[in-house]
Amino acid sequence: MYDLKVFTGRAHPDLAREVCSYLSIPLGQAEIKTFSNENIFVRINESVREADVFVIQPSCSPVNDGLMELLIMIDALKRASAARICAVMPYYPYARSDKKDQPRVPITARLVADLLTVAGATRVVTIDLHASQIQGFFNIPVDHLTALPIIASYFKKRAIPSLVLVAPDAGRAKLAARYAEVLRAPMAIIDKRRIGNEDLAKATYMVGDVEGKNALLVDDEITTGGSLVEAVGILKDHGAKDIYFACTHAVLTAEATGRIRESGVKEVVVTNSVPVDERKRADNITVLSVGRLLAGAIRCIHSGGSIGRLFEQEW
Ligand code: R5P
Image (cartoon, rainbow, N blue to C red; front, side, top):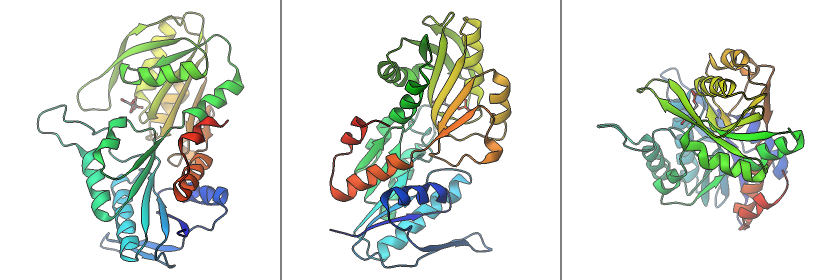
């Protein structure tokens, strides 16, 4: 059996430490710094020869530096003779650039897959991809986890009466249906369209009945909060009572927290797939941890166990 080792880049060391504490192993020792010419330097400070190595590095600000740092760490580990190198990216970089839907645009999520593979990654672990077909951009195994059981279990415990699950756009209809099934609630769908290539969204119609009911909007990520504001507005117009919002990735740009505060949403539930520092937290934001989920997945991968089984347990 190979030794199990977990390393972290500078993107989210708190999450890596939490994962290591679930695994009861110390965090791998590495030195990472940025020289004055902005070149990143990495030195792995312990032997990884023939080890099973996991590098935790979600995509978060500064996104491009974090990605480059991950690639450099993987290269260092490969040259240090690690047996297997798994890139653990709870939030996948450039996930929204997943198709050529306009003339002369790139598929950057595919480019990232190629970069990771060339660097030396032999496996990828990620959570709630914006489009699950991104898995197919890789010719190495991808374990695509979901935070759905963690978030759904939180709402099960809240036992909110007359709950209706709401997809904020057609793309999230399947996600809302999965939540609706687990929470045994009906669902509705909002028709939201993106306007141009700016971070602008407009919600115009709704399919389903939310009149007098409590609504739970579910999405993969919240970035500017624009989609949330649009969705809350249309839900209020249709007579919804309390409105909750849940998503996995709390990207949360500078304007998002103020928008959440002013939107009238009762509670926003996110995970720590990316760091959610104090500045970003409004009073009504609840952060759930994906640390135990990632530790469970790493344990399964290392020992050859079933990841599917992870989702059969209570969260
Ligand atoms: C869009 O397709 C995604 O699923 C999210 O709805 C979107 O990324 C949220 O971004 P924002 O908070 O900027 O509206």
